[in-house]
Length: 328
Image (tube, rainbow, N blue to C red; front, top):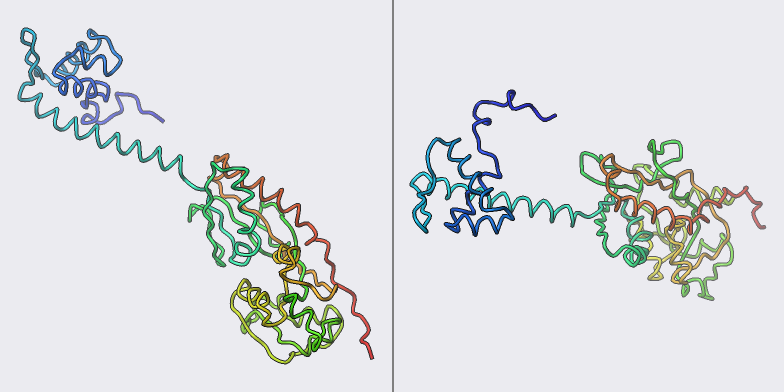
């Protein structure tokens, strides 16, 4: 709320207005009321009244008005130096604020696997639709406080029952074995049925503390109704995108997470040798900070994420398969 003049401190109430200082600085710089008035889009008489008002407030003249000449008094010289520096600094601050507002990117926080495998390959499409909007991707497996960290949006991966209030569900998650086409085509070690995994290296997410058991091979083997196999070897990774890179390089069979690997499957960079899938209870949700509600560019990112996620809705169709009888 703006305080009335009577409520201002005596010191602040004695300060000349910014308009008076701007008028004085222009007149002192040009040493001409006429040229200063033109620069400020004022009449010469209006500018003269501003200078007179400023002199009355200060209680001393700022100019010596001579015939066809205008000179600064000693007080005018002192005030001009300070007013000039103050106005220049103020102009720089205002310009910086405007630049920052115009160039401030939309910050999107998300876990590293989602950013690397799902988001980044699709970002060129967003850029083609919205070339004027800059996005800053903050890939971090920690859950950050959006308002405290000044983050506009976040894609959260969590159980359905723990979805943040006001969030929008993007899609769910399926798990299925995936590998490189070359590995799947190896006639010496065919991959025709789940039992064939016993002859292959299995790629694992390192989970010694049991933080995400739903991403482990044991869950998938239990879902398809067969005992877990250790394969002929194992490789462990602390990041899912590194695990998938190893699968792309033909180093073993990974437990792929759809829709994160759907693009790689569509492009035949990876193949899914079996139809058996396991649907986890996790899903991906878009969350907004309070400040992002005032940013139309943040809404554009949300709309794009929702529309693009619709193309990945097959991730919601996976169901936990019924245990099947083992082949004898």
